[in-house]
Image (cartoon, rainbow, N blue to C red; front, side):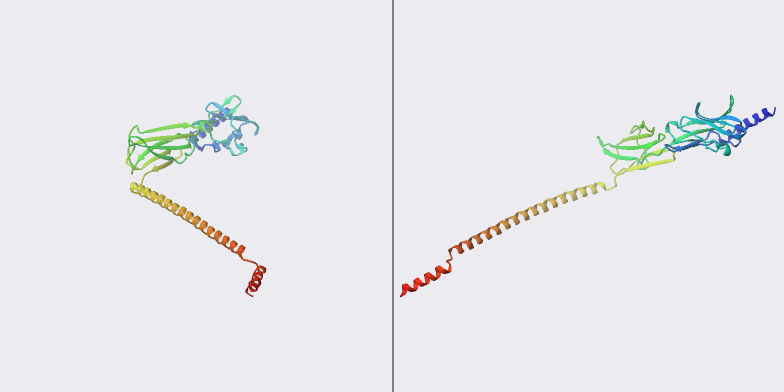
Length: 304
């Protein structure tokens, strides 16, 4: 009779703890460590028992205890519980990394004593999330006076909601938006590519909005052409033409200067060469001193 009352009290404790925790979900960033909470302080009252964490119906972690000693521990996903679980009552399952494939999966903790399996001591829902990159928005002119906008974002989880706004208030026409969603094979994170094709004025602004409700995250990218852009564009074109003309003119002036300088250099060298030639000829015709004296004596004798 006392044993029956003890088992009934233990069952009520299990139910009370389970009702207290409920099926609340734990939000974890993809790739980050996970701790699935479970607290039960009377676990030391058992003799020999096993703790089992199950993912849905699959056992993913088992810890065998005999006389307050952990004699065996097994896991399929590198999970573990704190080493001081019996002293603190902290039976939380610790996983090394959150995998997006396990989003919305339920984990439950059971106690196995002999052949008896308890009701779930704790049940936790696992939610995985990841932030998307800032949207990259491109604008291209299409045929028939239509404009195509391409919005791309990647690396997030779960699948987001994608919105478009024209001039911050107006929704695009029905059928003008086409959104493609793809899972990356290695990480199971999402890539989002959304196309908007619409006939709008050149001055209209267009915004692409990526909303991740689980992360409470909203990312926006806007493409717009400021008013008066036509005048600015024409002024830019005029400045470009003027700059090009100035560059051509300066280039021609530089080339003319170089040609004229080459002409002056050649003319100067020619004069210098002619002057040197004349000097050399004069020196060859000049008699030496001996010849001059002989000519002077001969002239005197002739006069006598």
